[in-house]
Image (tube, rainbow, N blue to C red):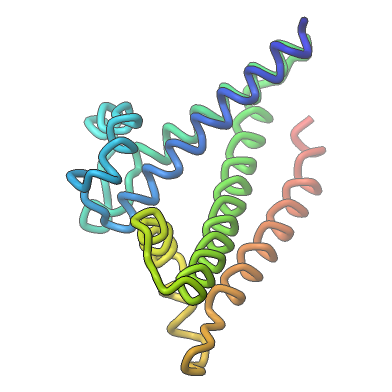
Length: 189
């Protein structure tokens, strides 16, 4: 019973985190909420707008601090809920540190998955010659992530190395931050 409840709790928090991440990326990619393909995601994450009354947006409204705070709250609820369901306690300082580090790692992981998705859909576009609206959304979501890497990678014509460089950069950052957290966590007790 407790194991099933833990799995359901994990599923709900993971789904909520994914929804808020998609909302963050939609806003970061400056995608309009009136687009009929995007509007359901904005409606499903209306709570970000509620938090937006407290936490401002930055970078001309493209970076939603409210979405970041909401993702942190979801992560803290996830960690403390799992600790409670497994009848373990977690102190506030380790909870905050673990929540923040796991949020950063989750964010990097989701960015890597988005880069992988953009690679796959770009191949689909090349092989089929058609662009479905979902493919277009994935490409537009990945563009703000890939744009900085496009500036530093050489232009090889048809071959775009920026997704590979972005994937490796996110992966190495994930390893570095995970290693730092693993070495720092025992100091918190």
